Image (cartoon, rainbow, N blue to C red; front, side, top):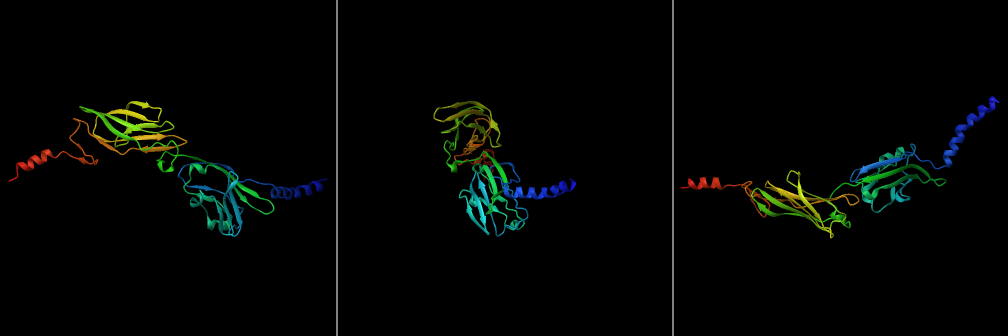
Length: 265
């Protein structure tokens, strides 16, 4: 009886190996969370097998994404082609990882690394990629509802105070809006009004002559941030700096000129 049990124990590793060969196995499973515009490496390795002249297949959500065969990128998704690559020198050791640079929100999904064996396809990695967007100017992306460039202007001037308007148009969904000075400090608002046509108007009071900028942010799913051109706003009585239409600063030189003319022969 002991001899029979010993023989069965010897056969157990072989039985396990047989099961592994004929069932689909997943290795290096996990979730990868990154920020938009970062560099992402999706890891996958084929057990120290030289893959230089073989084939491997990456799929995204079940669809062909990156297919390699005999030293050639046979099939790459059109929206990713300029941004994805494998590590050619690492193929000798079985490393078929791919790099996406830079990653976009649209790259989010489930990626599977497959060895397309003629007898039985084998999955070596399943990675859930989650890409969080970052706030940036997405005007060129032509996303519906993206706010165009806002503008900032002086509404009213009185001694030591200027009432400033920060205005944005056609913003859906409703964005955040604020007025900033040249140090990117937020100026406290007087009030903010929202209109049905997507126009938003913020008013604030400033007491210092400076360059002021209107900043608009639209959170996910748009993730859009856009700034107005800086506007130099003079405050009566606050300083002697003159406002020029070109946006340049001219320091007061009247005292110096007066002295120069007084000594002119």
